[in-house]
Image (cartoon, rainbow, N blue to C red; front, side, top):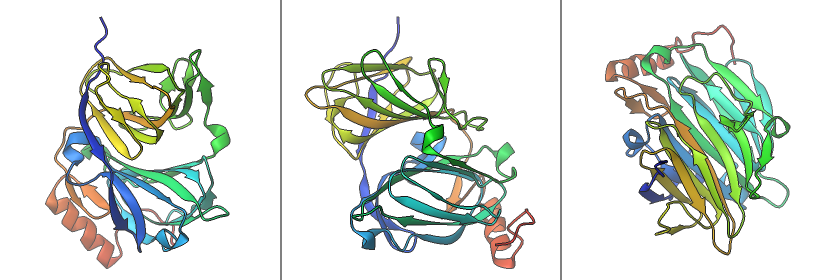
Length: 288
């Protein structure tokens, strides 16, 4: 018999300021990271006021992690030390593996009327891959498959597989799943999840129950952390619910984290920042 995952923790995202002054909501971060292994951080940047986001995230380094940016509305201008340049638009995804080191900038631009809405997820890399070669993937909205179930549930598959459909982002170390799901009113959605994996959901719009007992009706800006089990069950009442469903294989290694760099030991952190200061941080030949 299938074991439905129960809600282990429900968190309301909290306002914070990052970059050069970007106002956003943080679903989880440094303090909660051990609970969400292999994920480190999830930010929700959502505003109709350009003053909240236009200062953006100027040039800064990363090492030892992957940063995943998913834009719902607006644009993000990207540039990095590998020579990648471009703009990700509404519905696009930027999947960047910092690996041994990369320096980049992300500058949000709202759509006409000012609306800017997107998410950034940080995924950790295991020790054996901390110093892998950096890579950048610009995934256009048209490349992301969207399926509709017999029950009317809409699923955008960024990474992972639903039935016979796979997302465009593949060959990721932690084997993550990243889905954008909308469940219509008075419906339910079941999704198989392998035991032992970390599974979380972040509510974007509407309301829904994320447990079999329907004890809690969760609203936007709430993060659900699931206990172990074989599947999740999401159900709705009068309103639909849209949420991000994210899962990955825990790394179960020590985490040494300061700012944009995440390693396994404090000594590795010291070396990373020392290299950044003396100009030997980048292990690639491209120059900004």
